[in-house]
Length: 89
Image (tube, rainbow, N blue to C red; front, side):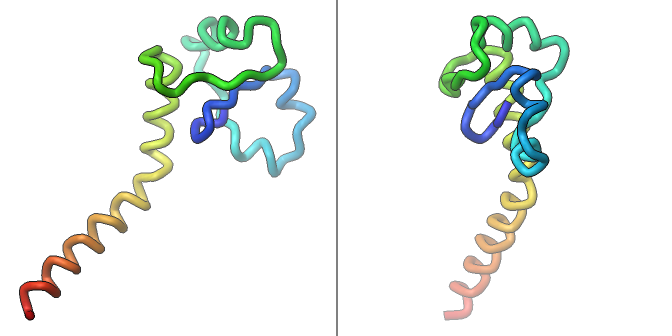
């Protein structure tokens, strides 16, 4: 599953992808495999509605957060710096 776009693909299709594309997709945990198969509904790929409140979407959002943690820390540092610079005016 591509946690950024919500695109879900079957394992068979993932094997045919190049290594470059494989980096964008993450393996769905075993406990969510049944839900992922329901979403796929026999198709090779589908797009999951990321606004749903399902366990699969919750997992994907936590994976997004882990990936963007570095970016989040940078934003916090920038915000603190701006605040300090405004006090000196």
